[in-house]
Image (tube, rainbow, N blue to C red; front, side, top):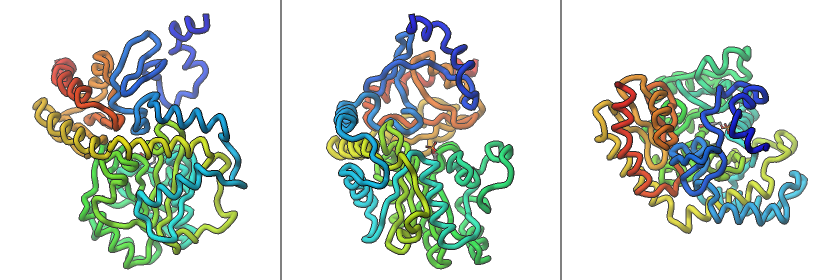
Length: 398
Ligand SMILES: *Cc1c(COP(=O)(O)O)cnc(C)c1O
């Protein structure tokens, strides 16, 4: 009976019970396996969005299921009066993956926006000044991170910014230099690949220039790798392509493979020592269940050499997509984070057409499709989408 009702009127039940901030959901999903999710009518979809860059191992991956099940049978949550083996293992592992120098340290939380809140506090506790962020940046929805999020529609209803932020154009080192010259900047935030902006990568050269300028002016450089980190580009962290060491890095999305977790990494003892005992905290952050999920994601990426796979599948997809239809003007990004740019605003219609054809993709803006598939996406699965896309494009333009 209950199941019958879910099938029948989930849209109405949703509207009557859930806050409308996400609009109407596209589907009511029931279960998943690998890169395929199934809705409650039994229709299957190849998921090329992966829960918005979260489900690195797809759905119901055996290693993830085993880790979460096992951990939930022993310890799920303990409070931060205590530590646990999974928490210690995860912090040490993340520092190693980031090649963080001695004295670096991690703060564990539950989401991307929280990871950025901790990063903002690190900057402001060191020097109470302005934060510089980039045009079209997205750093989250809580009030601090929201201050650093560029889109006015997201910020306007909520009054003056919690943080004094100046937005500058990306790829313009002179614009950054002139802000830093004023002497009142405490931190510079950027996504090495701007995800919500439409998958717009920053050049290695610009990241290097930012590193140099911030170091010269004694200002912290914060890289927000919430979307582009944790192996998504075929490197553990996207900024590593520029061979720089930031002062702070934030991560979340793929970190827990579907279990909520965020992390803020402070590089070096000068930065990791800024927040003293009592200056920041979280109840849930760093609980052993979330840490076990993250450790399962990391060890599977390592044991299955998914970084290599992500690089290969990303190259295959971006090359093929570029040639697949004349209305595709550009394919941006690398690995499992791609933005497919069209010559006009057909992305929303394409999402609907793709869904009917059994593919989940995202219109990150009116003219760009975002693909952020699980790292385990097979070549055959990628090719099935590439083969279907030209017909979908023709259908929406007709
Ligand atoms: C998704 C995202 C966030 C916010 O993460 P939440 O978990 O939704 O709070 C922050 N920064 C970037 C770059 C993101 O893509």
